[in-house]
Amino acid sequence: MQGRGPYPNDVRNPNLLPSTVLLALMLATPLSANWPGWRGPGGTGVSSSASFPVEWNGTNVRWKTPIPGRGHSSPVVWGDRVFLTTAIEGEVVPGREKKPEHDLGGEVFIHPDMVSHDRRQTMKVFALDAGSGAVLWERTAYDGPVADGRHRKSSFASATPVTDGEIVVANFGTEGLYAYGLDGELEWKQDLGEIRTLGLGYATSPVMHGDLVFVQCDEDTGERSFIAAFDKKTGKEVWRQSRPVQSSWATPVVVGDQLVTAGTEFTIAYDPKTGAELWRTKGVESNTIPSPVYGHGLIYMTAGFPSKNVLAIKAGSAGLQACDPCEADIAWTYARGTAYVTSPILVGDILYLSTDRGIITALNAKTGEIIYEGGRVPVPATFTASMVAFGDKILQSSEDGDVFVIQAGAEHKVITTNKLGEPIYASPALANGVIYIRGEQHLYAIR
Image 1: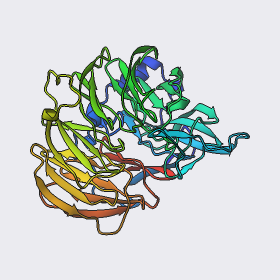
Image 2: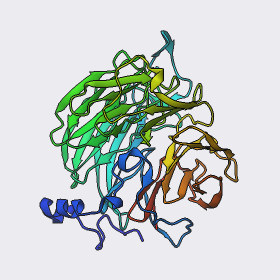
Image 3: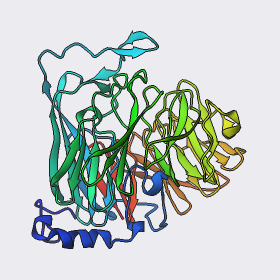
Image 4: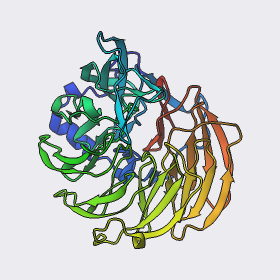
């Protein structure tokens, strides 16, 4: 049950605990209980535990907490805390009626679905108690006009935060990068400059590795695109590299000693410590929105519009030689079954793709051989959330609020359909036996 007040009796108020005790409690939590950032540990979307509910109703919805505003960022979990972001839209800002112009192929471009460029936005970070759903604290990171618009279906809080049990980092793109302590104290903030993304909104999530936080900032033409690393404790910029790629919304992934990034023109890997470019090869040659996943010595890149592309790129432990591009680096390709937004998922030896309508294709992850195509859910639906998995189960969450449980394996089978009761745009989080799902208006904990 959700508590009646902001700090019910069964919730630890961080203001009543010494910071050293609080930190010890958080760090003592087994890693399998955590979902620290976008798509969980390693950005895979797969939990190391299989102990999650397959069917649910009112009896095993542990709690639901209303979240104000609009946000497509996923919840992240560490120990007994859940963190997420939101953007609350305010009044029209005088003098900002004109839609921002963008550069697309050398031509002036104004996206027809751009909205909210003229309104005040309040961007917030929330911390909730994982056991009760009570809000422990909320902080306003930014409050004011925005530099660009967003797609009508998107949000100014689309980037998922990241935490390591010491700090939580939230990325609002042009409106700033913010780091908070577990007690909600602002530790540092960084101005990333103006990142223009064709009026569709910023969505790349920060990635934390060791003592560094990585942020990929690709804008309209690529003239000002960059990737940077910040010291997680101080916020000091450690390195920055310009990138020859146009707007992207994908989140990078750490593969051993490589920071691998997706892009329309190139796939590029960097040294996480120095930012030195290790290698580059073929890009997805379409809008770069799905994030890469890694396994079996391959990095899987996908894109769904305007063309549908899947690339399985070789990733040796020493990295590839720099090339521009190297077709020999591509283990296999596939040209069907991908989505505009949702990322693929690797479960065992099978790479699962989903279209915007939720039609699943299963490929042999090592060879690209088709295992099955055309796996459909029982009702027509549209999908924005990426799939997540535990054990041999895959969760596929639709914009209508249905969560389909898919049997992983060589044959497509929908085990059950669970109804949340409100639209779902954010990808779920899996931690400590609990499925956390962000609906359009509430955050749910299901156990």
